Length: 403
Image (cartoon, rainbow, N blue to C red):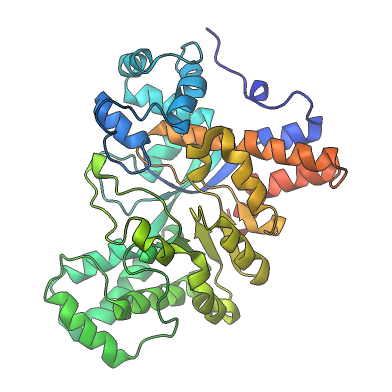
């Protein structure tokens, strides 16, 4: 059967200019690699489930909004009829092989540039260069701050040398990066003291840290030091600083990556981007762009911060892929508050190329519904809607990341 055409996935009543803007290649300003190898059904289901864990006995992750969307929208990309059964879909996936599946789905996403967080350090995941090659797109690296710190901590240095070596390591990695990224939300939460810690407190905390260097970074003093060191490097290099926020479910135990540490509903409030207000305010005079990632269900708070602070930006993240037909609700709520020049597209995908494809598809379809409603209500002209779609899809990211 012929591959589906992108324009068939958008409402037929959209003005031509809006349709063209939505279908234009996008910049995926935050994603992770997808698996390069084939996997079992149980392994695949863990990749498409938000928590990275098996479905309860007698159930399946195909019975989720994302699972149903894979059967509806990804099946035709692999040459199947829409709504193919999970068994048929996975059989076809195995027949094609991971390389061909990744090629079809990554190219089908309609992305011109991937910015890839390579900090998970999982050999089974595609590198930024491989993501770009298979997706027929440009690709750049996002440096994960906590991974750089972990490598420094395990290098066996004296506590007095910790700060200098960390600063040097960040500078080296930033030289080849498009952005720096922190997952402090899932290490100690975002409600940390926004001030820069003193040298003495950093040395004392480093001494404790280096006594057990393989442990995860959760000392608030060292987290603050890492962030301020990153701010210095980002300012010198003209790079944005990304913050992972919200209740992203990836403990991703399904592909060998340990959980975040701060997890579950009890700790969810610690990932609210509103807690970053003090730190964001402290950065305002420095000119370092701050990008809030994956903020669901706190996307309205993130939109508010983007409206208040000129250097703050936001994306909807993997909630768009997992919400499927509900993606329009997430995007509509963001657009209630966020300035149009402050919102960007980022899939947040990881593990399964299907999530990269669905994020792009659902972004286009969801945003199409929002734009159509604004046009029908007479609030925006078709030219306004097309311009906004271009800004969110690629223009804002190209400006912020200097692509």
